[in-house]
Length: 75
Image 1: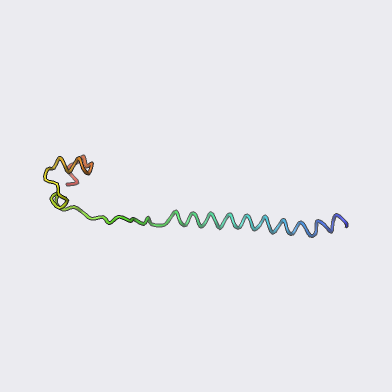
Image 2: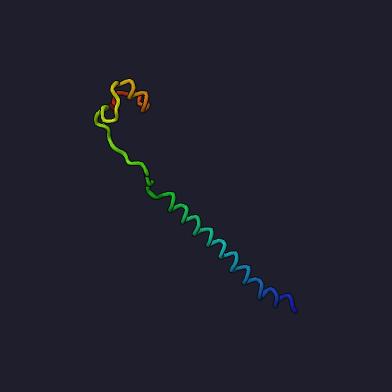
């Protein structure tokens, strides 16, 4: 078996494997980038609190301590 005949059969195989690995890596990177750019999916339902009494808080200080709101502009 001549060395050139061996390289004629092995070189295309390595070329296909290396190109396939590069393309696979590129597609995986695009897929991960696309997943990172999606809008976050929030599982909790958010609602605005109109009044402190809706959530059972009688005093303003209790509301601030419980919800860690240190500014009165949120109330």
